[in-house]
Image (cartoon, rainbow over all chains, first blue to last red; front, side, top):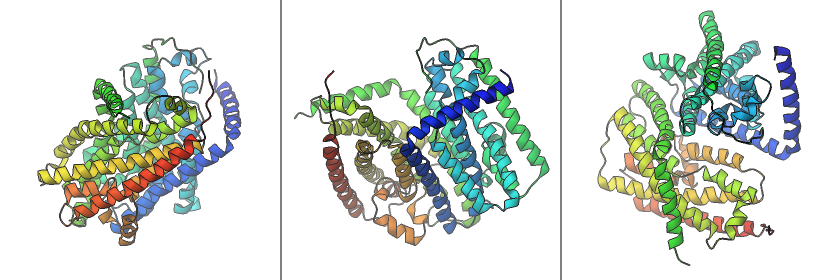
Length: 260
Length: 263
């Protein structure tokens, strides 16, 4: 399948998903609004936190707004368009890949593509915060970082999900790794120093998902801009390769499955 | 009505959990990540500002560890499970059994709390000990904190079961779970002690039940001085009674909506 046929597939898929979603309009609106409110609670937490402490390692409330704008926005995007990335390990463990292997390639795209509308609340929240926290001139850069952050989040999800090709009963661990990544990304990046900062940039790349984009939105640097862009694309590509290498070890589960 | 069937139910579930002990423990790895993050935050703030509202960095980390263990042992994911049972009709099948639905959930919940508190607790407290060392506590303090945590878990059970049963009227309760968990995290003082909040917010939280689930039990453990224990236990019991009444009313109203067919 070429790029054009992938785009045709995605367009058809999302059109169907959207039609199905709008069948349950009330549920759709409730979940989107609830996730937005859920995110508001986090910002409220940081608001009261910075009422007590003026700054943490140089980061102030405004930086936390930017962090939430970038990370919640990118996380929301990942859920809206590729909502199954969180379920890769479960699908592999339960032998559910059989269904996807019968479809025209690309297998991984078929696995991850799904609309999870709770993510829309996150995405809208991110955009709203960005509109409040950033001048108009920085919005294009913000949108660019949404994309790099999306690559890092998806890359991490694909990488930890693909571990299920090599180890069994991994779902709980994968959940911990996913939630851990989320948490490491969601707190002020300024508190991580030295070796910890290095780990969070290279091993568990939570820093590139949110912390570094926030620092770049505050103080732009070409060096870190290119590092962030290069890392996010490379990391995502390596994660995809890791999935396909693991796929060679996959054994059929003889499971009857439907896309859902 | 004999209670032995509820005991057997809890016992069977306990054996199943023990089988997957390591899986659950690996799942609790998340706690160590949160502890690590907050150690960085408190250390940075401690270096910048010294004592944090009377708390030391080790006290704040032990507070968080205890609150996290209560959260992980409280089975909050049950809210969505109960909602799913109502939505899918599995609750209807349960009604055919000679066992009260809420009673069965209670026995499983309590068994889950005791098992998880000790299994996850050993892990989380070991990580905390490794990160910041011990804090001075007496056996009496630990026991009092545990009793408060148990009462908190009981209060939490009534809340999550009630919210799960709202699926009788709502299509999806997962959004309720998101909001409830954030109330516990923030207004309930799971992430940071409520003493660190502005005064106006502390005043509001005193009138709400959420602080009695995690904040007070964890505070008793790390900063016992000056706490009126009888007042804390009294408020916990009062909220338990109120929550139990709300749960009973919700359950009775909900099962009136159940229509069962043969087949």
